[in-house]
Image 1 (cartoon, helix red, strand yellow):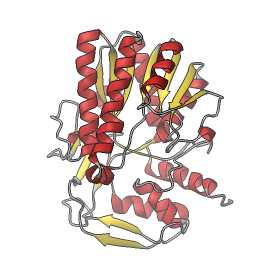
Image 2: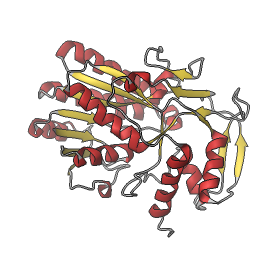
Image 3: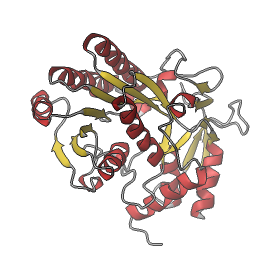
Length: 328
C-alpha cells in the first residue's frame, strides 16, 4: 500500500512506519519534527517536513501522493499542558485533524487510521473501559481527541470514508533491537521518568496520590509495549482492507499495574534505588483505567507479543541508556 503517516517521525508513529516498511508498504511521513526525529526513519521513508496547520503543504502532499490510506498520529499529548493551554490542543489536535480529513475527502483517500486515547473515557466507575462506555473526558486533551472522533464519524456517514479509531492506553517500551524509542527529553510517561531517575537525569520520581482505593493506594494503569501498539495499526489496516466497517478499538492488554509496582520494577531492572516522593492526587486522575480489549482481539488480527511489565521496562531502560550514551 501507499501510505501517508502524519507524526511518523515521533515515538509511536516511527514504530508503525518501520513495521509497515518491513512488510513492504510504501511510506511517506508528514511531520514538523517538533518532537519527532529524522533518525527514527530507518528505511529512507520519504519525509515531508511540514506542519498540518500549513494548508498549502498539506494539500500538496495529499493531492500528489495518490495514497491508499492515512495514519494520523500528529498531536499534542501532555494532559496538564492541555489544561493550561487548551487552545493549543484544540488547534493542534482537533483543527488539524479536521484539515487532514477534509484533504482526504477532497482527494479521494478512502481509509483513515486515527490515534486516539483512553483519556476520552474519563473516570469509568469500574476502572475498566470498553468501547461502548459513554465518553466523559476530564481534560482538553481527551476532549480534543473525542471531537476528532466525532468529525471522523460524521465524515464517514456523509462521504464514505472508512476509519478505525484506536484508543491507546499507557504506551511504553522501545524497539527490542534498540533502533528507536521515546526521544522526548521532557516526557511525562511514568516508565520513562523512572528510567531517567535511575540514570540520574532526574532527582526524584513523584507519586501523585497514595490514597486511591487500590491494592497499594496508587493509581492503576494498563501499560502496553510500543511494538504491540504499533502492530495494532497494521491489524487495523488489514481489517479495513478486508472490508471491515468503520469502528473503534481499545488497544491495551486488559491488565493493570500500580504506580508503585512500576517504580519497583524499574528499580529491579536498573539496579538503582532512586528517590521517590509522595504527592497529593492530581485533579482528574482516575484510580484505575484498564482496557477491555475483547473487541480488537476478536478480529483475530492483533496478536500482542510483549504483554509483560518487566519486558516493557527492560526495553525502555536499555533504550534510555543507549539514548544517553551509557554503555552496558
